[in-house]
Image (cartoon, rainbow, N blue to C red):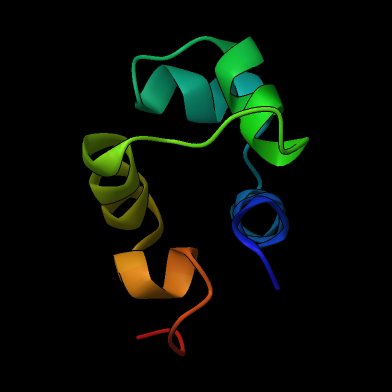
Length: 68
C-alpha cells in the first residue's frame, strides 16, 4: 500500500472525516483530500503529526513497516 491508501484507511478506521482530520492537524480539508488523491504529500513535520494522531510510526504511514 502507498501513503494515500494507508492514510485513507486509517482515517476511516478512526471514524474521521477529511475535515475532522484536517482540524486535528490545523490544515484545510483540501490538504487532506490532496494527500488521499495523490496530488501532494505531507512534509516531515506533518508525517510526524499524522503518526501521533493515529498512533502509528512514520514508517508505517509511508508503507515501510507494520503497525505498532
